[in-house]
Amino acid sequence: VDYVAVNSKDQVISVSGETTIKVWDTESGICLRTLRGHSGRVSALAVNSKDQVISGSWDYTIKVWDTKNGECLRTLTGHSDYVFVLAVNSKGQLISGSEDETIKVWDIKSGTCLRTLKGNLGSVGALALNSKDQVISGSGDSTIKVWDTESGICLQTLTGHLSTVNALAVN
Figure 1: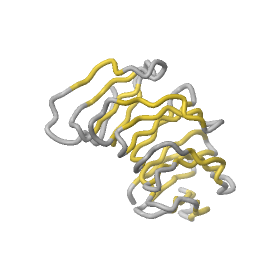
Figure 2: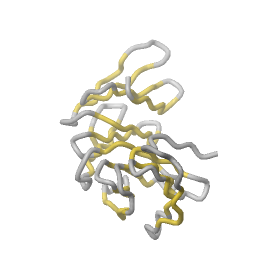
Figure 3: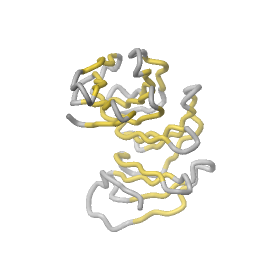
Figure 4: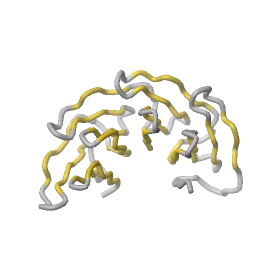
């Protein structure tokens, strides 16, 4: 299993190096449904609500799913390479990071890309959100960047790692 997300106290969403996503009932241990629609490996998950999960894939797309019925509600396109990481901010916007060295801010309801954050010199493989709803990114250029999602401006670049930054946590 590569990625796991929890969308309620009774369900877990998982992917494991394949093109499908599984929705599990944690009490019974039964797989409730398998979500199919990506043509490449699923590499990222984020929970939008109790009944919605979002997936990113090596097929360069992001899909918004209804976990109750397994329906793909919309497909977001705009990245030009693998989608590695997803996060949902307090405004209900989706943030995605990609091998294409960009971060995109999306309106989940419409599927519209609101802005593209550029400035990384390596793939974006880690995202976190702070209490100000700023995006913190880690990338293959060994840096951590703090972004203002409204303006798209990089507020700060943190250096010191010698290799790819592939995980972040905000305290």
